[in-house]
Length: 177
Image (cartoon, rainbow, N blue to C red; front, side, top):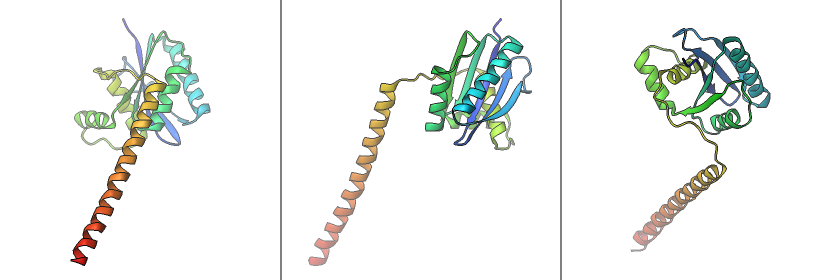
């Protein structure tokens, strides 16, 4: 029988709030802690997760993060590619924040909004199944994403400046007539 460890991480610019759940207890987390959102913090996360893996003999590890732009992308990349865990099976999932919000609303209507509770909901969402595709790091894909966003930004600026020019030309033509 599979014995996974579900780890929900609420990522912010300064620190990551972590909640670890198992299949044994539905609502009580195995561990809750905060680590800084930097390299020493992610190494501390690795050490704490490895100690949980050794203590409870989990055979798979599932990380869940809300997709919050660059903060979650760097954390997911680091978890997937640079950290070694004492576990044969490990996956990283990034959730759309809207999915977590809907999951929270569907299960508990009056839940407060804070980082500790959000980390628990991310771990509970992992535990519930129906997961998106796992996160995969691809430098060409990231480069293409950045180029596409830069092009979109340039086109938006060009449209805005064209509209200003056309409105000024219209006013000039109307006033001279």
